[in-house]
Figure (tube, rainbow, N blue to C red):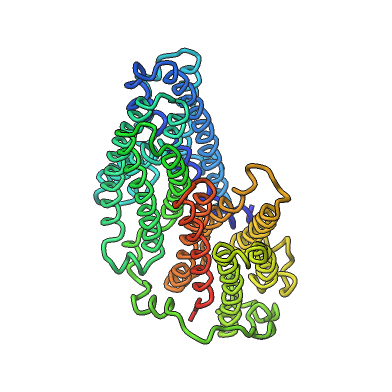
Length: 542
């Protein structure tokens, strides 16, 4: 039970991210049927019937996934309450948040049943779709920060509803838009589908921004809180991701306008940008899940990081730390007798040697990442060096080995904590999982570039793994008692996550596009690697 309580915080963020994604696809599918498929059915003909069937199938799958995730969320919260508060199961199951999960699971199950029946000829979904979608979003709005506010709770719940509705129609609707581009072959009808979805997206973005602005103003209140707290920092990351999403959406908006005069126009580019929008959009949803796990910035008026402290922490300084302190000087090397007066589960205060150890790890990791970025860039710029530089993925193995040995000094083979035992700590478990991801996509990319793996899906392992690692880093937190120090550490890690997302999806575009756009994307991701490496090289903790 204690192990579950220890990892619950991370598990709840991952589950909430999956819930937001499944919810957006479920409600987005219903909105796509209501505002696009059914109104255009007379013009689409047989393609419209096929599209309707595919939309209903994905709505069914997404709703089933949502039902399962909500049930797991409710069960895990119940177990956590039982383990921490030591109350009976029936009392824990009666908590408001658990009730919200149960109601959302029931609504998701109803949506799945209605979608399944509609595929078999049922027509009830045409009248039930808007009601079911609204009820689901309304229930979810009851599980947000809005319900904990003493003033303006209803207005904030309305803003949450509007924000989630916009995300569902826009981000959740993109997979269905891609289906339509595939199923509708007639150029004029396809152009009409693109125009209609573009209009839907513009309205959805307006709703999303309106709700987001209201919540941001209330929950953050001051500019200082936007950069001086973990909540504000995560909100800033979400805003930057949203700007990237808007940029991709803007490119597609221009492509859709071109399709009005050239119906057989930039179809490939539209599809590829839409694919990337899905990936970035899912990252935004997981970022929103991480944001929901943090207390609003206005509730933490003390221990905020100042602007000067942030600048001092982020400013590049030489020389970098390339020499490691001895392990015996670290807090992790203290004998058990020296730790007996600490509260249960507490760690000893970080010493200068602990900080030096961490900075050494980051700086050497940065050298590995810069080396990869430079080699990948030279592979594109020099035909003579390309055969040698194409082996750059092997550098990932060196990075993974270094992180395995050095990332957590209290763990085997350096510390007293056994490898299996250490996985009880959520932060250490995340480090280990990231190390495995690094090894996996490093080996895959090397084999792909050598031509040993010829499967069509193989080249996409690297960009997807990179993008997932970036998104994963957004959910990674450092549970420190010092809120200011926690924020200062997060402010150095969040840019790495954003650069990772940019690198992953630019590589995806390089693989999926052609011509000039392909060449531009091919230069973006190595540069993103170099930026990430430099950020690590100049990393500071004091």
